[in-house]
Amino acid sequence: MAQVNDQFVKVAKVQGEFPWHSHAAEDELFLVLKGALTIGRAAEDGGPVTLQPGEIFVVPRGVRHNTSATEETWIALVETVTTEHTGGEQTLLTRSIAEQLG
Image (cartoon, rainbow, N blue to C red; front, top):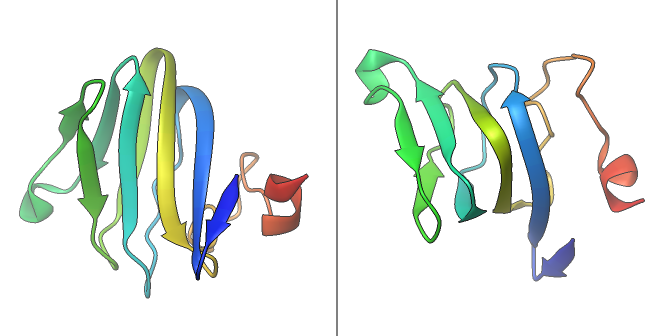
């Protein structure tokens, strides 16, 4: 993880399904580096989108979403330093900023 001004750039390996959540005040950028990532959204928000390596998608603030990957997928995320990992939802996957930095 790195910080550029008031944004974190996070690189992660993901697999499986991440919980549904939203970020009230922050947009969230996803860039797929390897594998494929599906970002789930409600139909009124455009429905799900699947990203391949090199593709970028921004989830606008307030849009409820989740992510899933059937195989190990490498992603980069760009999000404001105040962004809560699971948007305030408490799940087994919730990590504080301090835990993410560690």
